[in-house]
Amino acid sequence: MKQWAFLLCVIIAFFSGYLVKSLALTENYIEDYVVVTGDTANTNAIYQKGNNPSVFSPENIVNMITNSRSPERISPFDWIKENQIHVYQDRVVLEINDPEWASFTDTNSMDPVIDETSHAIEIVPKSPSDIHIGDIVSYKPKGSSETIIHRVIGRGVDEEGVFFVMKGDNNPSRDPGKVRFEQIQRIVVAIIY
Image 1 (cartoon, rainbow, N blue to C red):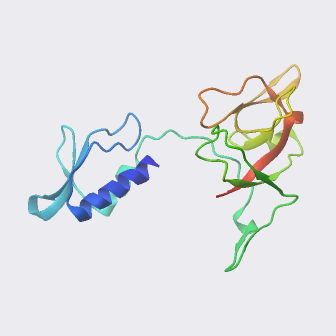
Image 2: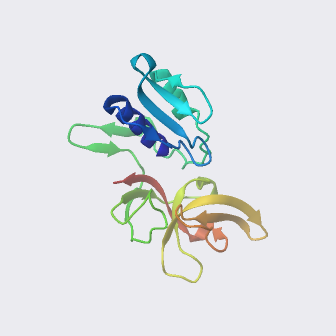
Image 3: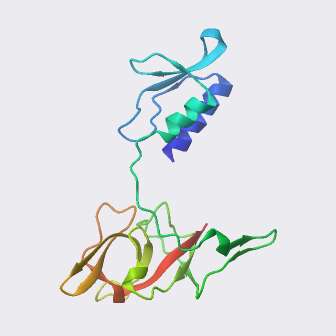
């Protein structure tokens, strides 16, 4: 998201002639970029603290954005293949076996991916091998009637068998305890905003 914000600022600076200071591509990365329009010979230049300017070109902008040091994060499994998605003028059809619809409460634990106004399509997993690190699943904690929808951030095996580690994207720490397959109700395969 910060990369798009950076590109937007670059475009605004390019067309409006404003000075844009201290644009950060990602945390702990480029922190002191200054965009100057109308620099020598009516070109736009990017100055990084202590470096010579580089002239704007579409190639330079794309390189700056794509070469950022954003950490790789594990994404959900590719549950719905491209050939299962059909977009028509008046509807969208997803070929999914046994889909279930879900809505969410306002806990903020999965912000900004899921919020109270989001809706999702879910499927029921058939075995522990259906659940991948990165997937968003709904599960019931032991001894609770509440349903939690969080991301799978780990998987392991102990004397009781396979277990999963969960965490809300917006939470500072992982969910307590190990989550067993029997506690997992559904896997989110599509989020609708």
